[in-house]
Image (tube, rainbow, N blue to C red; front, side, top):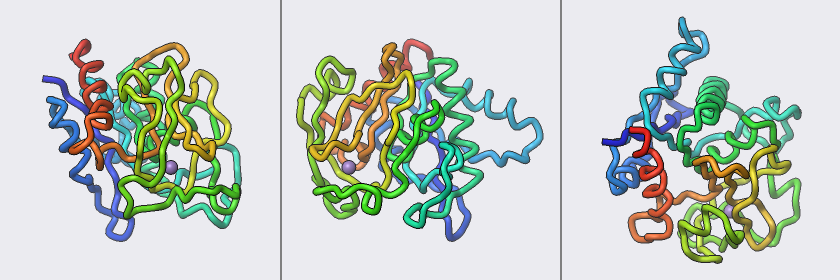
Amino acid sequence: MVIIGLSTNQDLSGGKNCMPPDYVSAVLRAGALPVILPTVPASAPGYDELMDKAINAVDGIVFTGGPDIDPKYYREKRLPGCHEPVPERDRADLSLMQRAVAVRKPILAICRGIQVLNVALGGSLYQDLPSQLNLPLSHQQPDHPQAHRVLAEKDTLLQSLVQETSLEVNSRHHQAIRDLAIGLKVSARSEDGVIEAVEFEDGRPALGVQWHPENLSKDSPAHQALFDWLVRSSERRA
Ligand code: MN
């Protein structure tokens, strides 16, 4: 049985760890056991060993959505449009990502996750799309399951999985990748040019998407295919 780790979201008001159930359901539909990884405080004794253990304990990992990453991690000061960061989660996600990439653990990085992937590898973000770019599309449409289309690049892992060049996606983000990290390549953009999906140039098993496939996967095979791929890639290691 494949075990897929889910990075924990945090309820900012109550400080509680939480997990939107659609992530759990999408992994279960793919035939694997989802295991929620706690946000280990950086002050915990043996922090590095705990984080190594967390990565070793899972066969693949989903980096889930969440709040803005502190721009200090991409060498910028926080602009007024960038929300308050959550230091413990930044630290936990970035350490988990660096470890997952180092050991070539299969990764599906969603929304904040694609941003964590890019920042962990040295890339940067737009801190706030509406104030930094004058875009024709709104990428913050929480109530629309089909907010905009993304265009998949040819000969990419993403295109092979969704089997389409154009895909309708939801969109709940006000940030996006700005400078792409070395080693990554763009696998899809929205029609207004925002980077919506990335993967590795060297073909290692990792995929980042700016939308939320877990909310669409119940009714859409193209979105469930991302979770099925993650579990299939993780099987070889289980
Ligand atoms: Mn979008």
